[in-house]
Structure formats: C-alpha cells, structure tokens
Image (cartoon, rainbow, N blue to C red; front, side, top):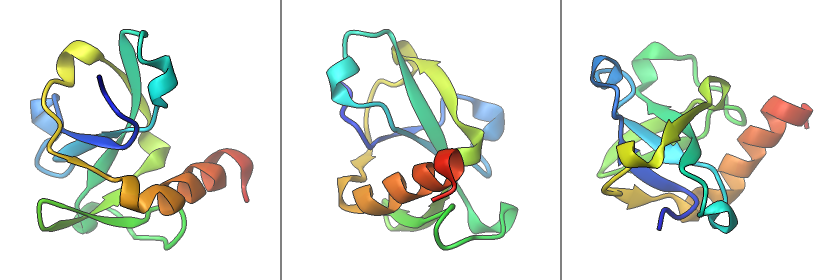
Length: 104
C-alpha cells in the first residue's frame, strides 16, 4: 500500500539530478487505483522558493522543495520502495496544493 505523502526515488532517471524524489499526494482511500498523483521534490538551485507554494521539506537529511506546479500521474509499478513519509508536513503540502488550485 502506498500512503499519502510517501516519498519515492524519482523513477525518471534523466530528472533525478534536480528532482531526486516524488511524493504521493493521492489519498490512501484510492489505493485500488493503479496510478498515483505525485509532485516532485526539487533542489533549491532550480526554483525560486516561495513560502506557501513551494514548502521546504527534509528527506534523508536533504532540504528539498515541493513543486506542485509539476504534478504527474505515475503507475504504481514505478513506486516500489518508499524512502520517507512527509506526514509531518501535511499542513504545508495541503496549503501549497490549495494555493495552486484555489488561490487561497
């Protein structure tokens, strides 16, 4: 089972340099679907961090930023071994998604 806010190594090798991980945003209630909505976690050098839209998170002692403007859907077969879970950042992640979709 993939939990909401589970973090996985980016399955797209060419993007791993700047986007080393993706985080599952999809709720676990939709676990029977074969895909997950994910957002990349990116290194600071490729974005201008904005406090609300791109919250800072820590994954394996590395500071990264959620980039909800690059949402994607990935097959669950690419999301095998979670390396972390960002449940502790729930409020910041939900705020970023709200900002992107609702402007609030």
